[in-house]
Image 1 (cartoon, rainbow, N blue to C red):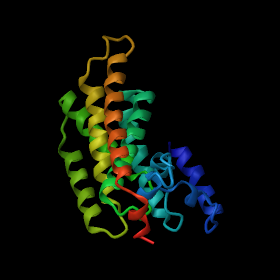
Image 2: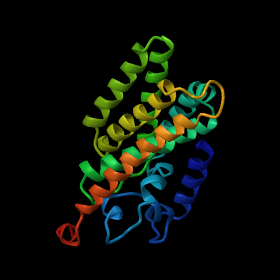
Image 3: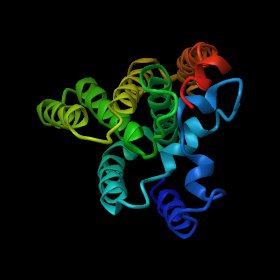
Length: 215
């Protein structure tokens, strides 16, 4: 994910200011989930974009992703870690759809990173580890989310909740005693199904008349 984000950021920088630029083609706002636009893939692609004018945005996210990945990927495995990232990113976009103005663009891996925070908390609780540090980290970052300007607290909350749900599946649903973890993936599919249902319901609220009022 770090490599993908870095390559995409370079492409964003190269195509900045163009109507067909990478940022413009793949960032997310609620209006893109509406029946008018029908570009729901942006709910995931936006998690690989970052603000071209703010290098600190991508540096902080990728550093945090690296730190979380060093701890979580060896425990979860690459497939579960990838699923955790994508589900958290999707959950962040669903929250943006419901809680943010439909014409406000969002980019960044922050929602997915918050999902990793939640996953680390779940894993530590499951294994009897000390959760005080991760609780403090989540608390401080949430406070910054609500106090800072141009920060999508909606995406952060959504990513945190979706990541917690995903991690809970991996931590508490039996995995078949060393065999294929079919049960875990089926339960996770149910979690994704709930998120998809919420996305559909959120999109149905965005009628053409509602979007015209924003112009």
